[in-house]
Image (tube, rainbow, N blue to C red; front, top):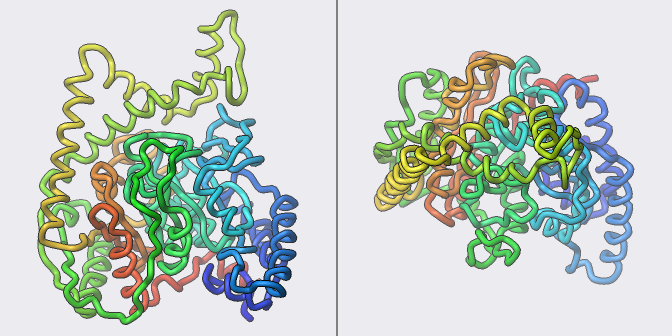
Length: 498
């Protein structure tokens, strides 16, 4: 068998169930890699190796027990290590959301997605780095330091799920959970050369998620390939009575078709996503990937999503407004550290003023202004109306096509600090991912090539509501016909050669 960290999630499950490796050996292999690479990468905020190994030992005990008594009943992910983005509650592990204001907060319960994965038998390696409260596109806004891209340590991994994407790309974990509010799974997946699924809004429970934008937040998955992502999705999707925004659709089990044909699949290509400012190498790689889909039998159609240009201003009114309300609860009285003042007002001011980061404070102020008396109708109200127009664009498009294919980001991973001091230029990095969040539809990003600097290029497929099955089938067919998703990051190869 190859090195344990070379295994995909699916291969690791098979190796564990066949007795080729123990959960302790597999977990220790990942912990060893994390110990060696983490100083360069900074992909994790919280690691507790002894807790992970204890979980692995319990998994091994159960694996032996099941193999002797009822092998057909073995838990689907028993003994498999995973990582969790640090905006999701994991009982007994810190949940900082990348912020100093939650530095010491330890949840007394699991998020629903974590609970479901625990029931499937996973071992939790740790909590991955994130932009503070998931507000960012580069993981530079974390109070716990910048995460670096495993393909080039001078560049960002994307955000806000940058820690999860970097950890998967560097083979520090086979899969990781992330969240996508405006592209925060798909964009880091693209920058790090991995596969990332944004689910339909409401398809996966948000219970136990530290909220950023409540009408936009979705929990997603990052993995090496579509097969691995589908395996996690099958376990975490489905209704949850603890989440008022959860859909009532029954739990779905994706079955990937491996016949390699896309006959009768209609793929829309929106002209608005191939615009001025798109890196030429990104456009070329995405168009070549679309040609691969056509060679597999898909029909390619030019479509229009005319309100795409308004996605950035609409998002940056709605999301900060929701964040302003959601983050009001973090005041130093119930969670995390408290910086006392002479009176209650001073305590609030000191705690929030000093423990929130610059970008978080910027978005809280933007949102508070957009909701303030005399401005709500002009800004927030108008943004909601334009959001409806963006939703209608997708509804009309899906009357003529099954999926939409487009770039994930205008460029490949940019240098750390490239947008420092210019928030607008950073916000514009999200132009191709924000519309799917505003419309609440699912999307999947996966690697389709490299630029001249050997940085990964990703393409996204966007589907209509609750069409995760179709999206993953198409992406799976593409990955069966190409090998971009099998490429290993430079940092991984450097340590593998030692």
